Each structure stands twice: as structure tokens, then as C-alpha cells.
Length: 115
Length: 114
Image (cartoon, rainbow over all chains, first blue to last red; front, side, top):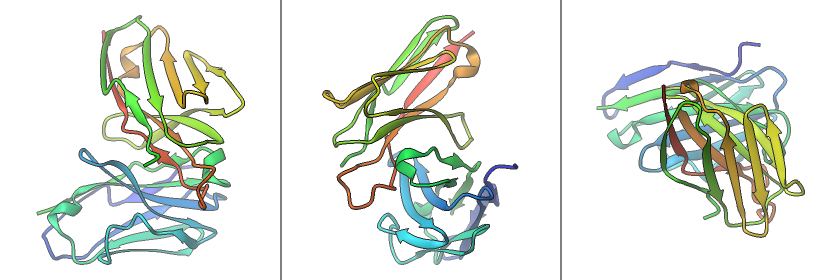
């Protein structure tokens, strides 16, 4: 298996632009997680899905952020409009079963820079 | 916050030495996991220890768990330059309504010099 795939790997955009990050989880995994990592705040869980259904989006910072999972093999995280403080590395991870008892597999991340 | 805290924040050692990292957490847990993150990469799972286990080994890794003190330690023996990375502990909160969430600690940055 190729592992969790994320695209793009790097994104540089101007403030106010829409940004879409993409993730393909490992086939057969029923949980998908979106994280954000910054030096100041560490690794934060933004939202996660179980069987394509959003379960907990309490970590989404504000309405500018949205996430979808139209099918078991694809998810997007969208920021509209983007702001400089959104600059971070965004990770997607997937797992089989409940996360508290199962390891998560992380993608390589998307480094987002908003100027 | 139930977020774990690793100690020390940074650690520098020579190849061949042992590295010990500690993690403290605040709530009741089912298990605790350790992850490694190489610079510019995603996190990689290292080991999972359940709440009824006190010690677990995997290759050069040794993890201990003390639920009474709400703490865990990760020992890397005979370290190598390739062990240079950040190490994170992660837990789920069994008292939370949402036990699927994994909360990561702040991490320990390990530098192993050749």
C-alpha cells in the first residue's frame, strides 16, 4: 500500500485566496483525521470522520475551515478565505477502528504558507 | 486540557548512548502511544502500551507506563544518528464522550550526534 497520500505537498497562496488540501487514506481504513501542526500550538486535531461521516469538528478554528469526505478514498480540507495565521503543516491520518486503541497512519503533510 | 507533556523538550546525546523521554498526562486512559516525527515528515507510530501493562519492548525501544502517576517513559537504547527526530506521546480519554480522539503531547526533540 502507498500509505496516506496528501496533495499538494507545498502550497503558497495570498491572503484571501481559497485553499484546498487533499487526502487519500489507506484503503480499508474507516477513520480519517485532519491535524494542523505549528510551533506555537503543536499538533492539533481539527476534525475526524468515521465511515465518511464527520464525528467531531470541535477543533476546526472557525467557519473559514470546512472538510468533506465524499467517499471512503478521498477527503478535502478547505480554507476560504485564507489568512496568514493559517500558515502551518496540515496532516491527514487514517486508522482502522477507534483511535484510542489503534495506531494512526500519517501522510507526509501539506506545508501551507499564506502571505 | 488532557494534552500530554513530554520532558525534556530537547535532548542531545552521542551515538551509542541511551535516550530517555518522559510523558505526563492528566486523565484516565485505555492506552498510551508513542510516535516519532522526522523533520519535514509525518508522524510514525512506534509502540502502544495498554493501561494494564507496565512495560513493553520493541527492538531498541522500551516503554513503561505508571497509571498511578499518570506518566510514561520511552527509552531508546544504543542510539543512532538516524534516531534524531521528535518524539510524541498520545492518549485517548476514556472519560470523554469521544474516546476516538487521540491527543498528542508537546514532543521531545532528540538530537543524536555521530
